Image (cartoon, rainbow, N blue to C red; front, top):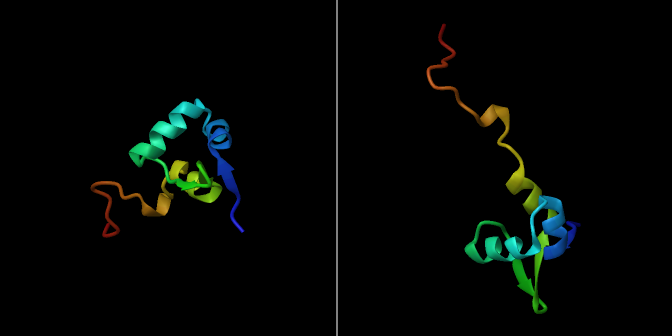
Length: 67
């Protein structure tokens, strides 16, 4: 089961102010759901959002396998 975080916990995880979390979620920049009068966030969705893309998905322009 995925861990559910509060806005304060997300702020701590991302090292930003809690007010910034609310601004970002209202803009749609981070995934969150309004539940029971407050915002709740999936830890795995937040981690996925901030994780760099995997090296296998990156393509280098001009790099081909035909050499």
